[in-house]
Image 1 (cartoon, rainbow, N blue to C red):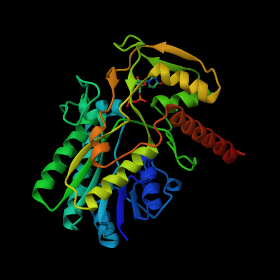
Image 2 (image 1 turned 180 degrees about the vertical axis):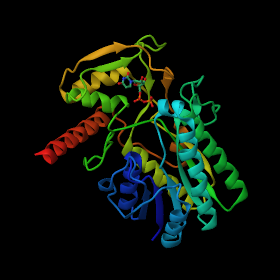
Image 3 (image 1 turned 90 degrees about the vertical axis):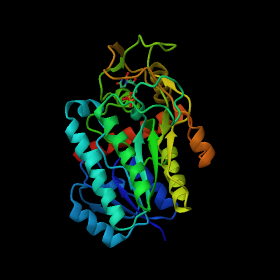
Image 4 (image 1 turned 90 degrees about the horizontal axis):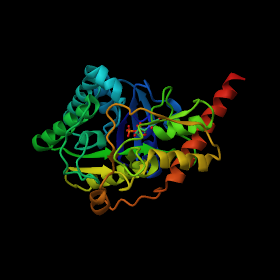
Length: 332
Ligand code: UDP
């Protein structure tokens, strides 16, 4: 049976991929420092609590489990924080990726899947964005990921090593069975904030900027359900395991929704007319980010199953209600 090491497998996206790997019959070992992840989120395989900065521990895990492939999710992801503290991002996202790659090379792991991001494109000139668009990140978070992509490319030329970098657009929603989902003490993402506002946990939802050059003046994003994204990882893994070459793929649906459209859909799905106010722009938000995902559809035959904004919001809503119920239960 093929064993896969998943760093950050206790986090939001990582845990959905661990689930998909387990369901597809892979043996999984998660390596996670639980700084933002949760033990309960790891539905399959073993969990090793460890940090990527800890090279000794990492080597022990490689020696013990001898993975055939590595999927690397563990990273910091908060853009404004990366602007304030870039070294934290270069240390954790870039330097620690080098630690992981050193272990891969030492233990002969030739297959690597990397969580990249649409933030590598910065403010793209053309929408939808193809993988050939220039890499011009506008914040250290995006830059920390670009650097890893470049390191991966160099490694693929120097060692027996192939990789797939998946550039995620706006990942949202939760497991269809509502077993796992996003948990964040200070959520910044639109759909999470919208459902929390519907639940009364946030007083009113702010729309950041209504004067963008878009049809309704608010930003447009390509929201992709986390389970469809997880499936893209399985296809990427199969590609590498069947000796496919190193590739980079956008992960999005190829069409976007404005902030206002997401707000209206959230009201419809939840049945709650929660308070919404117009607020100034948030720094660093490009007007529109929409993936051209032709390449992954064509080359990996990725076929989205959950390309439905209502379903994405519904799963996020059901998950948020579950989190709230369990919090109440724990207190009583
Ligand atoms: N947004 C908003 N109000 C919120 C959170 C987000 O208007 O409370 C907007 C944000 O400015 C952006 C879009 O929603 O235009 C998506 O933001 P999110 O943080 O979800 O993802 P990002 O595209 O920044 O990765």
